[in-house]
Length: 404
Image 1 (cartoon, one colour):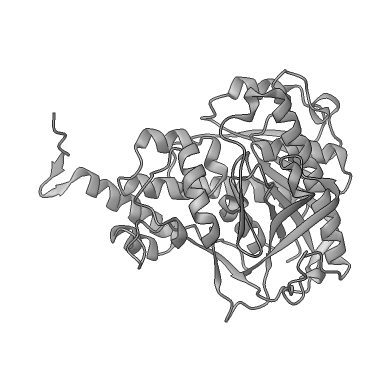
Image 2 (cartoon, rainbow, N blue to C red):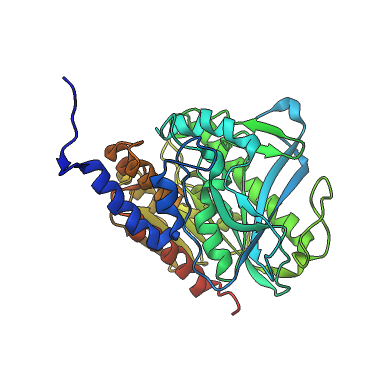
């Protein structure tokens, strides 16, 4: 039977809904989002151009990437690759951004891999979106303000790239933090290294279904995070840790305060972040964004079994499919400085850029409402994005305040 849309006058109900969503989104994203989405995509006409919310802080944001190699470890996911290598992005309050281009959310080399992996994993539209067109609000290579600022490390969820955490990272940087987003090669959906070399992920499902894999994945992420901390200390001391020795933005090393470090992570990144807090005293405060604190076998991680005397935020969503399992590992976590919160109207990936982009895909008719709700929840991005931002930024502002 042929499906026909209900109409109001000569305008389809979908068009009315879309225009309403876009008008509301314009308040969060700026006026350009309505024009771009209404015309169906980017200037190249390759599909819908997704827009990320602008950061709200007083500082413009600069960004640079670093290629880091840990020659003390072999890569656990690729025996033939030799030493463990990583890519990170450093976002920071910039002194000036004129003449410095805005960074894309996904690099050209990463787009094809992302389209073939993350799009399938998250049930995103297979066509109709120009994934290469999305721009962040961070300016590549802009000079940093030479003011020592707290450093926050970000670990994405299992199989996700660091770039899908751009919205929250830019928000924190605009409010005075240096934010370092990490990819974990072999685990992240795709990682582009210098020289146009791209590595994809071995993950094609839920790592919780394989206890040995999950244990190795989290152990690797904890070791990665501690290694990145070492490299940031070298950067703050005036050295350039980039493997190719690429020039650093002016003043970047002087912008990091390695004595004031926090961390936050989503899903598997949250698990690793919380455990790194337990293992590494350099982490002063940590936020776990819906990551388990136990192994699939039920064995608790030490952070849950023994607790912590440093601030730990356990932040969850109302719509997470495995809340009962998650709550079992969270409820036993000890420590008088452990905070637990749950965000209403949200689902697991509301902590990522999908909180802003999934509703745009739904409004354009590219994503069913049920798929959007399962991914990020039913809340409009005008509510969910500020809610996540306030929750995470408020936690760090209290326990690790940035200078004004």
